[in-house]
Length: 321
Image 1 (cartoon, rainbow, N blue to C red):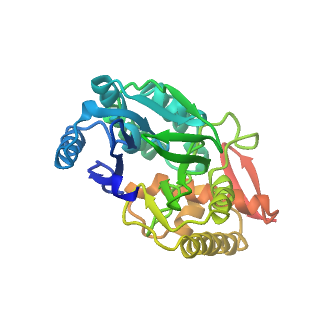
Image 2: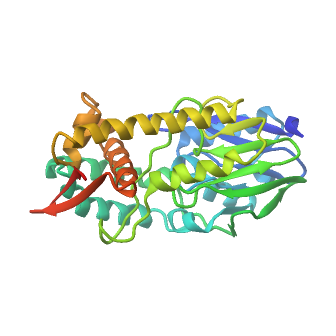
């Protein structure tokens, strides 16, 4: 069965580099993820399919591992050309189906929230404008089937179990083939980097909100219970040893969390100050992702009762408990 799976490396305009798109070859071919909606990605996808003796109009299903444009951006265009049905988890439906409005709503949230981290207004506006320029990286895409955790789906005879792995996004999923002990991991598990716990919009930082890193680490436990021989990730090389990689990811997060706590034991910090202490000398282009990472690790520490938050004069502060 594995010989029916073909990896297409599709270029993206993002620092992460190419995205892995997987073709399930058969009479009713399927794609797992698509690449972004750029001319370069569209041409690369068509060339890759041609090399395998396939064409876009043969695609019948498109399964999206999560609602980020580098993974689903071309889904709408492919579906228009082929009539393919687009499948995704219900928690990422709005991100996919309401693009670019969902992007604009997220930017509106960032404009309101980021000043509370201590990020200067000039930088806030610069980052938000840069994000808005991504509006063309995906096209309007109707999600035809909403996937659920533990559901089993069939892609031209290949049976796959849906594993809901919230963290990198609320609706992130992996797909598991029990017969081959094969996992399509999306961005949930990558070989050399960890996915960013991208901040989701919320009405109140102190209220109910999606805590990406808390969810992410909990989602890793689902993979631990599966016999996995081979992992096909959303970016980069295959992963052969799932248990070893899970251990590496957890250790990485634990070290970063402990370093952050050591910083806070020296005195309370704004989130931007914590970012500067945790990631000194980081390029400006990585500031937003670093802020999201800091908030994620602060959430872990708060869950453990090790830190608390306060808001004064429009700024959020974290301090060791």
